[in-house]
Amino acid sequence: MSDSPPLRVAMVGYGFMGAAHSQGWRVAPRFFGLAAEPVMDTIVGRDAARVEDARVRFGWSRAETDWRRVVEDPRIDVVDICSPGSSHAEIAIAALENGKHVLCEKPLANTVEEAEAMTAAAERAAARGVRSMVGFSYRRVPAIGFARRLVAEGRLGAIRQVRALYLQDWLSDEEGPMTWRLDKEAAGSGSLGDIGAHAIDLVEHLTGSLLSGVSGTLATFVQERPLLGETVGLSGTASEQRGRVTVDDAAWFTARLAGGHAEGAIGAFEATRYATGRKNALRIELSGSRGAIAFDLEAMNELQFYDATAPAGEQGFTRILVTEPEHPYMANWWPTGHAIGYEHAFSHQVKDFVDAVTGGRDPEPSFADGLHVQRVLDAVERSAASGSAWTSTERKEA
Ligand code: SOE
Image (cartoon, rainbow, N blue to C red; front, side, top):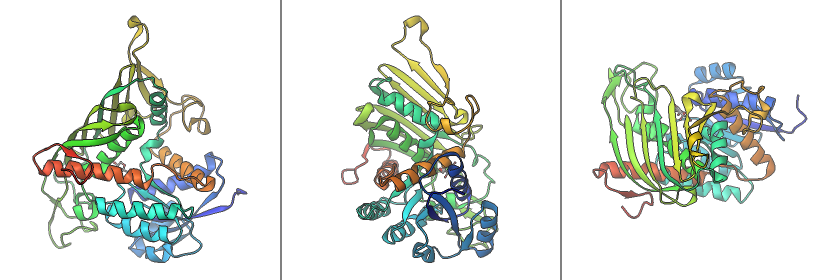
């Protein structure tokens, strides 16, 4: 057992993200020296039998069906929100008002208004030393951290073009079942918010620039899908055979960037769950005056780097295996060349969150960062609704 003081965590939600976050809470303190020991205290979900099953599988001490009791529980220090987007604002604001540090899954909320209210609550709480962070976990992939370092060191020079694609194909079977991720009320948007949000956040994180305007197109290819008995949180009733898809299946947009290392750059973004054969391909390419980087999450231990200042005859993309101790986070894992995977980013996320809480600092990405991503999502939707008109990410001017 560690000598560090306990940090008691309550996690709301127990689906895909609940499993990934549980892994992070359990593993991070074993590999990283943390100044507080996360205690997996309470897991929360509406269905008593399912949440009890998740408690046992993921290793939490207690199960609870009412998040309100948890955010008011004086024993709890941290509330980790892994439930669908429709629940984020209410839980996060109540937790922050009760003095709990909050880690909230992305996208921050389902609407700009909710994200604004959450950011205001986070700022009030920060004045009292209460911390908040959005779970853009891919910021914690070592190759992304390394790429950010190269950009910050000026190795790419002025970035002029950005390509950011997030390609999955799990919806390409049109008989695949409805899930809450296809329901606007629960999820806010479809591919755009679920995976496009990661592409937006990573580009802003890597470049230090913000997307200032967009022109977007959204498409929904399959309008209805079979309802399963277990489908939860849908607007249709359980007796219907098929549920209506109320979100985008694919999102395309171009953008302009402002500030940072990509001032004046243009970007092309795509988010889809219909890219047949692409399973989880989050691809980022940044082209600058002195060099370029290319990253693909399907080969997440690698970064491609092109140094345009090298002698002409030696130029070419170099594949860097990002598993050296000098690469972000890697010194705490395995010997050189021993690759890590998807779940490690969640351990890194816990490490960074706990370091900020114990170090008295505000962690990143902040709720304000999450709010900006939300504004971009909203601008893409408004642009698509107006026939792809150029749309500012600032709400007021259309
Ligand atoms: C979580 O960070 C997440 O965005 C999921 O919500 C997506 O469905 C997944 O494919 C990528 O990660």
